[in-house]
View 1 (cartoon, one colour):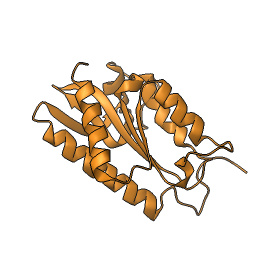
View 2: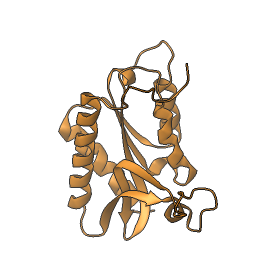
View 3: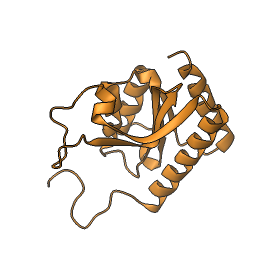
View 4: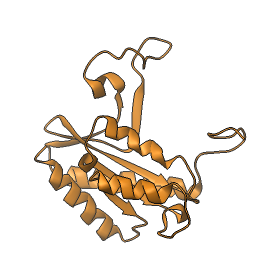
Length: 167
């Protein structure tokens, strides 16, 4: 069986959409509450990310491709300081590792990742989600898994944003 999203299937579910919507809302509200020095961009071109013309990542029209982030790329005083991403998974075998692409241009501590769903429940038995959580935390990322309490979620966002000021 080939990898990736199969014909006739979808990469999102009702639960996934709900999780992402909450993530985007809470991130946006907390960033806004930090003041006018802070901002969010939903996507960046590869050229914006690498700071020069991209040789390989052009569209057929010759313009730079873009990377989107669920919660957005976070800017402090017009400088990119972080990224927020949300992943929902019903099982433990999935392409959640895509979140690691940000480690190609950010430090782990500049990443805020919220994981939700049964695929991110702490239990033994293999899969790709457990190693991802462990290695992201090892890299210094702020990782939430299945945090349902909104106040707790906001507290973690705020602590992470405060840590980015010194970048």
